[in-house]
Length: 248
Image (cartoon, rainbow, N blue to C red; front, side):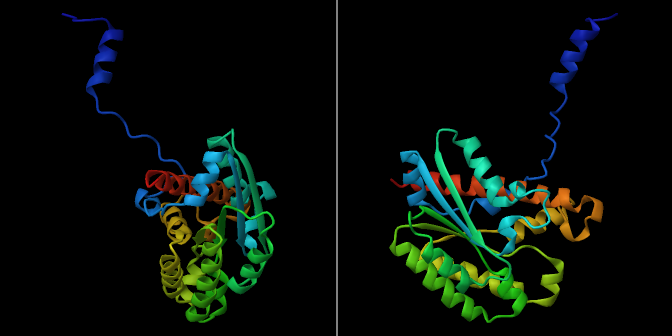
């Protein structure tokens, strides 16, 4: 004897079955990688006032080499993500950099880009130093100098560490440079965005793996990397601002 119509039976079955997990997004990241966001008080104040200036400084990857258009570079996608999160925000994202620049080169760029001064500097550093085999102590001195200079001017800084690369890992002591970046940041109360670990996670889970991408798909994958980094940096910055708001 039938107890109910097929439609009712289907609805009952749907309620009894466990919910299916949501499909994984390409840009998903282990939560613990972003939980380390430190308070960004100058950024929080700027967001509260409705106007934020961000300075991004780095080597060539800030311009998205290999992407289909410059608009797919991660700083451009960061700007788009922040605008989507805060459509009311007056936002300016300035990007400076170039191929082969070291921390010392970037520090000179930062010092020259203070009119008007940003509230947040995202400083992408460490890949060139590791590739050239520069002494980690050399990098530590430049970072300490730059972070202290920015802190004295009440400017938040987020250091972004190296790109993940199997080739780089095989030919350089990447860990030594990562440790140098973390120690320098801790000494000045700066945050560190874990680009290396994020890119390694995406590669290990077959989401974004530039080194193993077929040539025909490489440009699209570079675009996807820019999108994912931009979204994740945006979330990291907003979390840092939220942490600062809690301590007010």
